[in-house]
Length: 269
Image (cartoon, rainbow, N blue to C red; front, side):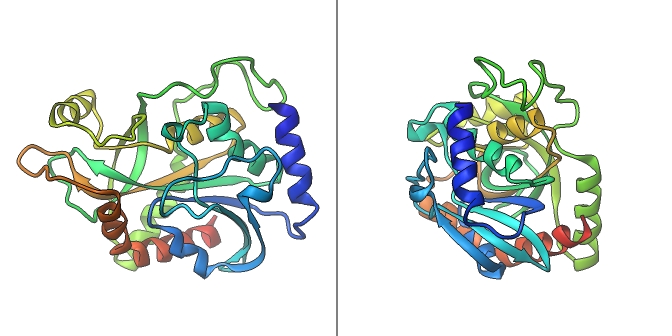
C-alpha cells in the first residue's frame, strides 16, 4: 500500500503548484462548498494512479486544489465508504495522500442521523468524540513512517479547532450542537432498535463515514475538525422512511451556513 500511496502523491505533485495547508472532505450534499474555492487545479479521481473512485450519488470524485478565503486548500469532492466494497486501507488512502501532499489540518463533513432526542433535522453538530462500530483501518501491518503502532485517541477531534469553530458560529449567528458520532458500515439505514442501541451507547448521531478517516488522520498526526448535518432522525416517535435523495435535500438547506463556517475557519486557523 505504501508504494501505491507514493505513486499517487507523485502524480498529483506533478500537477499542483501551491502546496495545500488544509484538507477538506465534502460529505453528502455539501459539495457546493467547492464552488467557493478559487480553483487552480482539479484532478478527477479516476485519473490518479491507485486512487479509489466514488460510486455514490452526491460524491462527484474530484480533488480540487486552490484557495478558500485566500488560504491554500485541497478539497475532496466525494469520499469513499466501506459499503462500496473497498477495504479500510482503500477507504482511507486519500487521507494519507493528502498528508504527504503537505496539509497541516483536516476538516471533515458528513450527513448523519440524529439519535439525540433534542436534535432536529437540519441541526449542525460539531463532533467532539466518536464511537467506532466499523473495522479499524489500522488493522494490519503498520506503516512506521506514517505513525505509531498504537495510536492515542484521547483527543480525536482537536479542541483548539473546535473552540475556534464555536467562536465563529457564535459571531455569525450559526446555531450548532455538539455531540458524539457513531460510525456503522451501512449501506442500510438503521432499524428503530439499532437507533436505540446506538443512542444507549452514548452517541448523538450515526453515519457511515468519517471515523476511519479521522483514525488515519490521527495516526499521521493531523489535527481534525468535523461537523455533521442531521439529515434524519432516529428518535422514537420521529422515525420516518428516508431516502438518500432526502438526505441530500436536508443537507442542502443548511449548506450556506456550512460554507460560511468553513470559509472563516480556514482563515482563522
